[in-house]
Length: 315
Image 1: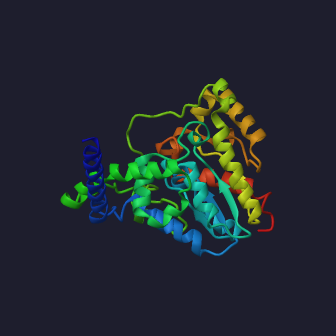
Image 2 (image 1 turned 30 degrees about the horizontal axis):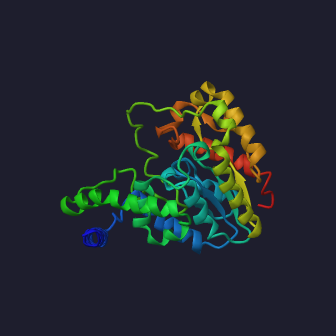
Image 3 (image 1 turned 120 degrees about the vertical axis):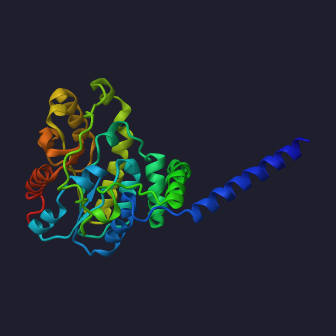
């Protein structure tokens, strides 16, 4: 009796799995979506020859840096790998590590949440959709938890893909879509758009006591392992901070100082600048505390160039 029940349950599980696989095949990812731009970024990483400046991070990198300006200043190709914080720090670093070439210069600019709270392996829906849209990106998956996150996420995306397939619903706005990126990988579709009227959300750091505990050890371990891979490949790597609201910095200046102190003591590669260096007034932001408008993007890019000049004087 029990054997028959187990057999029936196993058969049911197999049928469910096959149906899910069929849905994934029949209902493909939206090839025009924002996250589908992972394909172009992945190809840039593996096709542009060194030396290159490679920018690593989430949407703070995608929306808030003028890579073309950096490229023109240093006369080195710039590749902006940023898309979403939801891909997870592990994915971001893994993807770039496999594409490293001798002579590259890598700038790691993670969101603050990657350092102390955000899942290192990403969020299901965002990482799952990215992998579904960019199958080549599966090479950046290295942990069992990432595989679980991706599997869960792909299932979560099926509803949206089904609605799009049946009704032809455009699930992307006129800002966040695949064609909104330039040749370096910067999202530029938002630059001349009016700032959306929405409730302001503030960046909040953990307490100083929590920052001093083991909160940041996993992320620093990943960052240092990536640094070691860069050294082995004869690649220079530097850490920089994302742009944030100056009012968020001012309200938590002691926490930012503590975080900077912990990173300075724990990271095995250079930090360029401080959190305060990348704190800007509200009028320089677009639709979140990580997404900057044209003026903010230029101000942050100028600061990045200023900090890079001493470490890459040969250019």
